[in-house]
Each structure stands twice: as C-alpha cells, then as structure tokens.
Amino acid sequence: GDSVTQMEGPVTLSEEAFLTINCTYTATGYPSLFWYVQYPGEGLQLLLKATKADDKGSNKGFEATYRKETTSFHLEKGSVQVSDSAVYFCALYSGGGADGLTFGKGTHLIIQP
Amino acid sequence: GAGVSQSPSNKVTEKGKDVELRCDPISGHTALYWYRQSLGQGLEFLIYFQGNSAPDKSGLPSDRFSAERTGGSVSTLTIQRTQQEDSAVYLCASSLSKGSAGELFFGEGSRLTVL
View 1 (cartoon, rainbow over the protein chains, first blue to last red):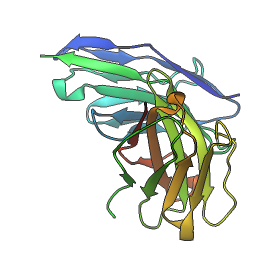
View 2: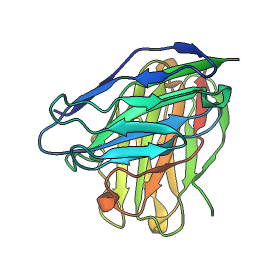
View 3: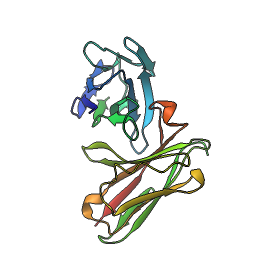
C-alpha cells in the first residue's frame, strides 16, 4: 500500500538557518504530493503541493520538488523564522482507498531566536 | 462559515462515558473526513463522507465509534463507552469533492481526554 516516511523530529534550528525536512514515499501510479503545516493550537493547512514529476510547489518561502526518480518531496526554506515553528506533514494523494490520502507522521520544527 | 468549525475544542470525560464531537464543514464542500491525531502517531483516517453516499467507515477502530452526517452538512462523531486509549485530537476536514485530490481544509480539532 501507499506510505509516506518523513524525518523524525523535533528539528531545532536557529533563526535564518537553512531548512530541509526529508520526505519519501511509496505509491502505485503517479500520486500528487503535499506538505501540510500545523501551527500551535491550529488545524492543518495546506502549505504547498505538486501534481506531477519535476513540479515544484512553493509558498511562504518554502519549496519542494516532486522527484519521481528518488520518490522524494523534500521541504526546503532558505532562511527560517521563529514563526515557522510548527508541525509539518508530508502527504500523498493516489485516489485509492477510502480517502485517497496518506500522511506521514509529522515533523516538529522548532526555530530558536 | 469561512472555515471548518469543530466543537467542543476540548473535552474531558470519564472512562465509560459517551462523547459526541461536532463538525461543521465549509459551505458547499461535499466531502467530509474525520481523522484522529495521537501524539507521535500522525493522522489516522477514521471515516469519509461524500455527498449523500454511504460513508466509508473502514478506518473506524472499533464498533464504539460511529459517525453520521445530516443533510450532507454537519457531522457528528460519537464514541461510546470511552477508553483511555481514545484520548487524542479528533480532526475534521472538508473538500469540494474527493476529486479535489488531496486539498483538504481542516478544523482546529477537538481534544479528547479520557480519565
């Protein structure tokens, strides 16, 4: 079945550091890939997405590129801020199954001033 | 409403009691989902509603869990005879349709604590 693996947290960085959160997936066919973010006390919200190989999703300074050859969708940001502290979930949508969505376990990111 | 609304935001109950959690999706969204978020466990799919079709209950962990969606809008998740392992945040999400391909709008969740 489909699965998403993302790096364990918490990840702790200093403000203005470069961020990478790794995400790899296993799926049949050609899924769409997503990053969701959950800020403290809030629900998940869509951060960015990519629907086909080599697509790059971007939003709020974050980027992720759909790499079919490595089945990866790593999240990057060049200079993080304290306000980026949150839990980040990688997810894929394959259209199969009840909801079609498979989420990773989430990575807690902590940015220190 | 502007977003997905869930209530209560926090619920503390005693083991063995029944609880009801409510979700009001975004107006016009035909698909509604319930997930459970436990510490360190990510999101666990529970149940999915699409319009007036019969829901897919394949993710419900036991027969103590049930959900309904009235009039294709508001949904209620009911947990009977709660156990301590039911303690978690219950998230509701909606989307225009299943064909929205993974773009879900989430509520803030209902945090359930079973003593």
